Amino acid sequence: MKGFLVYHNKRFPKIHDLSQLLKLCAKIDKNFLDYLDETAFLSQFYLIARYPVLDYPEAGKTEALESLKCTETIIKFVKNIIK
Image (cartoon, rainbow, N blue to C red; front, side):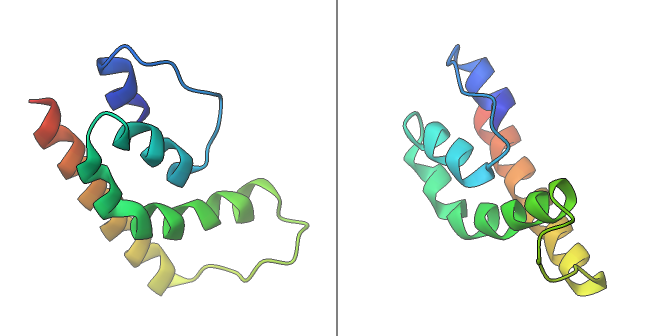
């Protein structure tokens, strides 16, 4: 999504919250909003990795597979609209 924003010459804050990045992208293309659930799901794992001392549930194989699926879906969408 950061690449999409750069492609459109848009500035963005130094953040890792995918839902926030998605909302910035949606200002250019509203179709990004179709992926709000995926970004919300993925963003939770950044917190787990970044702040391991906080009390977050651990991610297992099921969450890893779902994360991969969400990521691939978003990447495919962005690649298709940049072409």
